Amino acid sequence: MVALAACGTTEDDRPATLRYVTESILAPSCGEAQCHSTFKQSLGDVFDTVVGARQSLHRNGLALYSDRTNAADAELIHWVTDDKPFNRTDPQGNIIGRMPWDAPLPNADIDLMKKWIAAGVPGAQCVPEDYGGQDCNLNAVVECDSEGNYGATVMACSGATPTCVCDGSSNTCGCKAQ
Image (cartoon, rainbow, N blue to C red; front, side, top):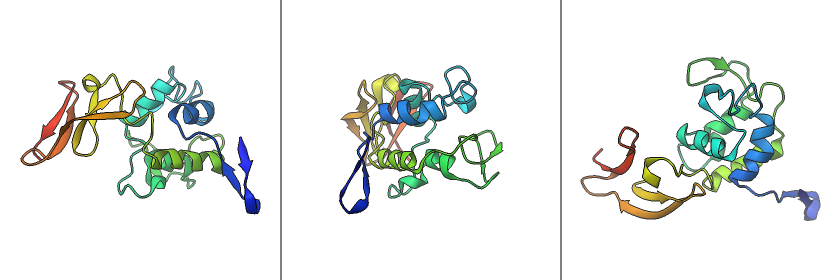
Protein backbone atom coordinates (compact mmCIF):
# COMPACT_ATOMS: atom_id res chain seq x y z
CA MET A 1 0.00 0.00 0.00
CA VAL A 2 2.54 2.65 1.06
CA ALA A 3 6.00 1.78 -0.24
CA LEU A 4 9.16 2.88 1.49
CA ALA A 5 11.49 5.02 -0.59
CA ALA A 6 15.13 6.03 -0.16
CA CYS A 7 16.26 8.32 2.68
CA GLY A 8 13.64 7.07 5.14
CA THR A 9 10.70 8.79 3.44
CA THR A 10 7.53 7.15 2.32
CA GLU A 11 5.92 7.36 -1.08
CA ASP A 12 2.20 6.81 -1.33
CA ASP A 13 1.65 4.56 -4.33
CA ARG A 14 -2.12 4.33 -3.96
CA PRO A 15 -4.04 5.46 -7.07
CA ALA A 16 -5.37 9.02 -6.97
CA THR A 17 -8.64 8.10 -8.69
CA LEU A 18 -12.30 8.70 -7.96
CA ARG A 19 -12.90 4.98 -7.49
CA TYR A 20 -10.06 4.56 -5.00
CA VAL A 21 -10.80 7.78 -3.09
CA THR A 22 -14.48 6.86 -2.86
CA GLU A 23 -14.15 3.18 -1.97
CA SER A 24 -11.15 3.48 0.38
CA ILE A 25 -11.57 6.90 2.00
CA LEU A 26 -14.96 8.56 1.51
CA ALA A 27 -17.30 5.55 1.74
CA PRO A 28 -15.92 4.08 4.98
CA SER A 29 -15.40 7.48 6.64
CA CYS A 30 -18.16 9.73 5.30
CA GLY A 31 -20.62 7.44 3.51
CA GLU A 32 -21.98 5.64 6.55
CA ALA A 33 -25.75 5.21 6.89
CA GLN A 34 -26.24 8.16 9.25
CA CYS A 35 -24.22 10.68 7.23
CA HIS A 36 -23.56 10.90 3.48
CA SER A 37 -25.01 7.58 2.36
CA THR A 38 -27.44 6.94 -0.47
CA PHE A 39 -30.03 6.47 2.29
CA LYS A 40 -29.37 9.67 4.33
CA GLN A 41 -27.84 12.06 1.76
CA SER A 42 -26.94 14.62 4.41
CA LEU A 43 -26.73 18.06 2.76
CA GLY A 44 -27.40 16.31 -0.56
CA ASP A 45 -24.00 14.64 -0.58
CA VAL A 46 -23.56 10.90 -1.19
CA PHE A 47 -20.17 9.27 -0.65
CA ASP A 48 -20.96 5.57 -0.37
CA THR A 49 -20.87 4.92 -4.15
CA VAL A 50 -18.64 6.12 -6.97
CA VAL A 51 -21.60 7.53 -8.92
CA GLY A 52 -22.93 9.31 -5.82
CA ALA A 53 -19.51 10.75 -5.00
CA ARG A 54 -19.05 11.96 -8.61
CA GLN A 55 -22.43 13.69 -8.56
CA SER A 56 -21.86 15.26 -5.13
CA LEU A 57 -18.34 16.44 -5.86
CA HIS A 58 -19.21 17.93 -9.24
CA ARG A 59 -22.71 19.28 -8.69
CA ASN A 60 -21.87 20.80 -5.30
CA GLY A 61 -18.43 22.07 -6.33
CA LEU A 62 -16.69 20.33 -3.43
CA ALA A 63 -13.41 19.82 -5.32
CA LEU A 64 -13.17 23.34 -6.75
CA TYR A 65 -10.60 25.80 -5.53
CA SER A 66 -10.36 29.39 -6.60
CA ASP A 67 -6.77 30.02 -7.64
CA ARG A 68 -6.02 26.61 -9.27
CA THR A 69 -2.71 26.49 -7.38
CA ASN A 70 -3.64 25.10 -3.99
CA ALA A 71 -5.78 21.95 -3.81
CA ALA A 72 -5.85 22.39 -0.01
CA ASP A 73 -8.28 25.25 -0.67
CA ALA A 74 -10.94 22.88 -2.09
CA GLU A 75 -14.14 22.76 -0.06
CA LEU A 76 -13.82 18.98 0.46
CA ILE A 77 -10.37 19.44 2.02
CA HIS A 78 -11.67 22.20 4.30
CA TRP A 79 -14.47 19.92 5.50
CA VAL A 80 -12.02 17.19 6.53
CA THR A 81 -9.21 19.35 7.94
CA ASP A 82 -10.68 22.40 9.67
CA ASP A 83 -10.39 21.40 13.30
CA LYS A 84 -11.64 24.44 15.16
CA PRO A 85 -15.18 23.80 16.35
CA PHE A 86 -17.85 25.95 14.79
CA ASN A 87 -15.56 27.64 12.27
CA ARG A 88 -17.51 26.78 9.09
CA THR A 89 -21.09 26.69 7.96
CA ASP A 90 -22.75 24.16 5.72
CA PRO A 91 -24.87 25.27 2.72
CA GLN A 92 -27.91 25.63 4.98
CA GLY A 93 -26.01 27.92 7.38
CA ASN A 94 -25.52 25.33 10.14
CA ILE A 95 -22.28 25.86 12.04
CA ILE A 96 -20.05 22.78 12.18
CA GLY A 97 -16.43 21.77 12.60
CA ARG A 98 -14.18 19.15 10.98
CA MET A 99 -15.72 16.09 9.36
CA PRO A 100 -16.16 13.24 9.95
CA TRP A 101 -17.14 14.11 13.47
CA ASP A 102 -16.22 10.80 15.07
CA ALA A 103 -12.58 10.57 13.89
CA PRO A 104 -10.26 12.63 11.72
CA LEU A 105 -9.04 11.18 8.44
CA PRO A 106 -5.39 10.10 8.41
CA ASN A 107 -3.05 12.71 6.94
CA ALA A 108 -2.02 10.26 4.21
CA ASP A 109 -5.65 10.03 3.05
CA ILE A 110 -6.02 13.82 3.04
CA ASP A 111 -2.77 14.15 1.09
CA LEU A 112 -4.00 11.60 -1.46
CA MET A 113 -7.25 13.55 -1.88
CA LYS A 114 -5.25 16.77 -2.40
CA LYS A 115 -3.12 15.00 -5.02
CA TRP A 116 -6.28 13.78 -6.79
CA ILE A 117 -7.87 17.25 -6.69
CA ALA A 118 -4.66 18.89 -7.98
CA ALA A 119 -4.66 16.39 -10.88
CA GLY A 120 -8.09 17.74 -11.93
CA VAL A 121 -10.36 15.24 -10.11
CA PRO A 122 -10.24 12.50 -12.74
CA GLY A 123 -13.56 10.68 -12.77
CA ALA A 124 -15.45 13.62 -11.22
CA GLN A 125 -14.79 16.34 -13.77
CA CYS A 126 -18.35 16.07 -15.05
CA VAL A 127 -21.51 13.98 -14.68
CA PRO A 128 -22.32 12.06 -17.88
CA GLU A 129 -26.09 12.22 -17.22
CA ASP A 130 -26.11 16.03 -16.97
CA TYR A 131 -26.56 18.54 -19.80
CA GLY A 132 -26.92 16.00 -22.57
CA GLY A 133 -23.46 14.57 -21.86
CA GLN A 134 -21.72 17.95 -22.04
CA ASP A 135 -20.21 20.32 -19.49
CA CYS A 136 -18.07 23.45 -19.19
CA ASN A 137 -14.30 23.24 -18.92
CA LEU A 138 -13.03 26.76 -18.44
CA ASN A 139 -14.40 28.66 -21.46
CA ALA A 140 -15.36 25.72 -23.65
CA VAL A 141 -18.26 23.31 -23.96
CA VAL A 142 -16.83 19.79 -23.79
CA GLU A 143 -18.10 16.25 -24.03
CA CYS A 144 -18.40 14.31 -20.78
CA ASP A 145 -17.30 10.70 -21.19
CA SER A 146 -18.94 7.75 -19.44
CA GLU A 147 -16.21 7.74 -16.76
CA GLY A 148 -16.91 11.36 -15.71
CA ASN A 149 -13.92 12.94 -17.48
CA TYR A 150 -13.77 15.83 -19.91
CA GLY A 151 -13.61 14.76 -23.54
CA ALA A 152 -13.38 16.60 -26.84
CA THR A 153 -14.18 20.29 -27.13
CA VAL A 154 -17.60 20.82 -28.69
CA MET A 155 -17.46 24.62 -28.78
CA ALA A 156 -14.86 27.17 -27.70
CA CYS A 157 -16.34 30.29 -26.13
CA SER A 158 -14.81 33.59 -27.22
CA GLY A 159 -15.60 36.98 -28.72
CA ALA A 160 -19.12 38.21 -27.89
CA THR A 161 -19.91 34.97 -26.02
CA PRO A 162 -16.79 34.31 -23.94
CA THR A 163 -18.24 32.28 -21.07
CA CYS A 164 -19.41 28.66 -20.98
CA VAL A 165 -22.63 28.20 -19.01
CA CYS A 166 -24.72 25.09 -18.37
CA ASP A 167 -28.46 25.63 -17.84
CA GLY A 168 -30.25 23.10 -15.65
CA SER A 169 -33.72 24.10 -16.85
CA SER A 170 -32.90 23.36 -20.49
CA ASN A 171 -30.29 20.68 -19.66
CA THR A 172 -27.83 22.25 -22.12
CA CYS A 173 -24.43 23.93 -22.12
CA GLY A 174 -23.46 26.80 -24.38
CA CYS A 175 -21.49 30.00 -24.72
CA LYS A 176 -22.97 33.17 -23.26
CA ALA A 177 -22.05 36.83 -22.96
CA GLN A 178 -20.81 37.78 -19.49
